[in-house]
Amino acid sequence: MITTHVLDVARGTPAAGLTVILERRHASAWSPIGRATTDEKGRVASLVDGQMLPGTYRLTFDTGTYHRDQGIESPFFPEAKVTFQVLEPNEHYHIPLLLSPFGYSTYRGA
Image (tube, rainbow, N blue to C red; front, side):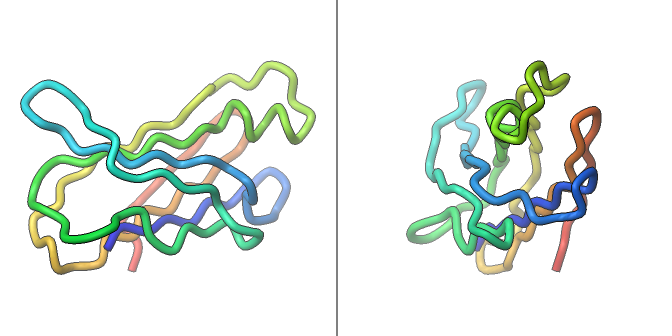
């Protein structure tokens, strides 16, 4: 399972309504395998339908649209991409994003 939680640290609130796309790498190409929008708590409960495979995955967060919706006309980061390895397909991979108009950070959550 791959989940995420986005917090808008500049506003001190969850980042609701932010689009997240999950992709898996095949050689040098990326294939989209999941897409969701964060709920009112800034969470996406699952981005994968079916069995995960070991490999390299990437989450793309549409931070530009989110920030424009919050009244920031020219966000510095139009998107945040987080690439990570899935070694054990049966494990839960939680990838949080801490977001502000001029920066972001992430970590492997629990």
